Length: 494
Ligand code: AHR
Image (cartoon, rainbow, N blue to C red):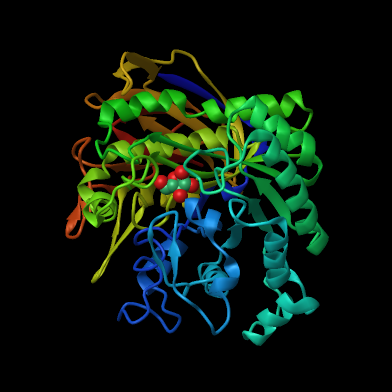
């Protein structure tokens, strides 16, 4: 395929928050993931040093917390101060110790160097409870909640800028789910109270690509919102743990921008596209496996609890996850005029990019995708023209076939003047040729992330998916590349 890049035709700057992550109180994400007091690998705050270091390594810009479904029956006041009672978490049907709460979360964000992003309880919670939380975090010293934070040893306000009203409150699986009208009114009242506490914060509200749902939110509360949240797990294996195979995952790449396109259309129709941005604040190729919680309740722990350990099987996170993740980051970049934040779900354990075990961590292939994007790609999206896009056919999980472009190519301009291109070859078997025409450049090098086969993975003592960097090569405005099958590539031009 031949691609002409136009570095002078700069389209827009994307927000680095599209490389954000998510952490829920679920299985071994928070407890036993990043927070593990008493573990010799943890620091004085109980945080796993190796996990924090890995999160720094991918420059996590923003971390959404504490849920997810968990938050829809969570009361933040239970997890602040000296009196912390363990309570039953009705979303995930386990005991929540409440030892990791707001203070621990903000301290952790400071260590990582990321923005906190708090998702509030709009299931069983109220507008008042949400705004009390904002008082605790952001007021200097006025009122009981700011004073409580100070009593707890935190004199300076936390200045949490990003807040989301609710999580998936449209879904019948969510505790305290609402209909579209109720939701519009609750978002309006919650937004007002939160902004009365701190008018400098930026608010989002749980949404989906649905006209009725979004119209109700935006008509009622559009003037107070800066964001609208959407989520997507393409391989929806929450109840049945049969992962889509490599080819089926590549068929999903034909659906990467569906939700964005639909929500963009709604925002444009309402004249809000310059005011409200999309926070794609939960996404992953695969849904987390947790049978017996949403539909058909499991009775024994064998039914609903222990199966969650199957998410820990590292052999399942292959080049399918790796290539798909890079293609989604390309989609966010391409839509960076309206997608301002995205949060990979989750950052650690379950389907995350970091896996913890008692002696250390495993960095799955998806970890290296984030590392390559944050370290190498530019933040200005530039125009390109592919003259002869090649198409490939993959079987779709739901039946039938899906035709998708075999290569996914994105061009950016970096602050140091480098033109940086990402290019994925989805073909499971064949190398594919890519000719890049970039005016004015004289050398290039290619970074490739790949494994020996589509089924390669990383695990304890197994490094099946690793990045490699080629030598700088001279060129006169043209690079002729052969992209390995099932590979993620980043090409730097100077
Ligand atoms: O499966 C994990 C859950 O997926 C998250 O808690 C929720 O937000 C989403 O539905």
